[in-house]
Length: 323
Image 1: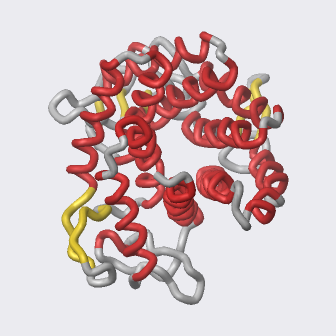
Image 2: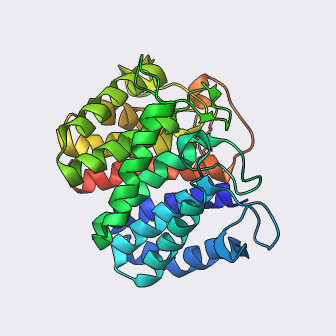
């Protein structure tokens, strides 16, 4: 399925970036065509519009959030390489996302293409705002920035909990909010706010990001005494590694602005401890998604392994940059 394959792609893109300028650069650069061609097997054409489908064949369901994660990876690959093929795919995804904006629920982006009259989700709308910022940074075309601002404002109006600044999951056409909170659904608005601050210089966006970060860290990390590291620190508390990888993007973006390493330290210590503990299967080096809720597992999903690779690679990139 494209969700898991996309997570593998994200892990690769982060690792490729971390390897630039190191002894590993040639190894991961050589994998680029393979990864690019493989994910593009999921492109289908329906309603005269190309997008990534759930399965690599025509006539099956397409999700706006599945697409936006890949679009973000394509934008990042363009930033790494300057090759237009990656920008073209990011713009293809953007065009698809724009079809997902309808008048229901006051705006926002649908979760899936069919049925069209369905819920609007944070997981499709927030990363679309991030993609809009990324495409604006690349092209300087105002349409991307304007839409990113619009999507971010919609999220704050309809899906943010004013009591803690975290974000709910979705809203129905009848304006009923699903108040479930998932880490990635707050990490992406955090990243969008940081990017909007970088672009516009408007302090309100930075204040938003800082408020989200405080509550997200409080909710999804807990104090832990690690026998492996011999110290106490705030460790990831949850069992969805991919969600945490997406949330980490927001914390990284904030760190690059405020230089406060508190949140980065929590991710760094969590991953170091995972690698040195029973979380890691010594025969395969795969990491247990269930470990952070004190459980074990005997099978692994590409979705979560992609998330683990991404987090480790993001930390490696920070280390390489002396951050």
